[in-house]
Length: 137
Image (cartoon, helix red, strand yellow):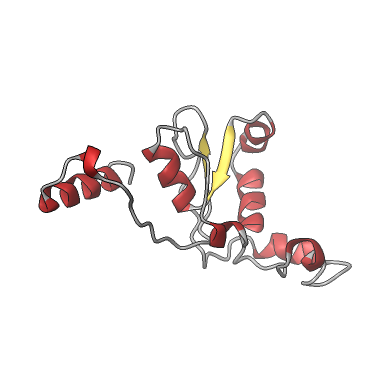
């Protein structure tokens, strides 16, 4: 996956007969709830991306909904508890990938959606940002 985005950009530049110095902007489309955690120093993911409709975190959601239901955290987050949203995927990764939670607590592991990771990679780790429509989720 890591090489694909570079080849796509190189191919588009070649087709348009442009150099990279002439490139002013790119558009990124992504599945906004797909979740990835990667090493902040080398950009390598600790695990495969968990896509937006993956329901492996259902049990975590059920546990979170005890004593408060699906709207338990809605006032704070604006969202119901559901496997669709990133937090349950992150919790699943912490529970299932040895040492990942510790790496995150130490600041070694960082989380984002695919647009965040692509921008991070394209800027050689200099920009850790996302689109406002992703951040609002």
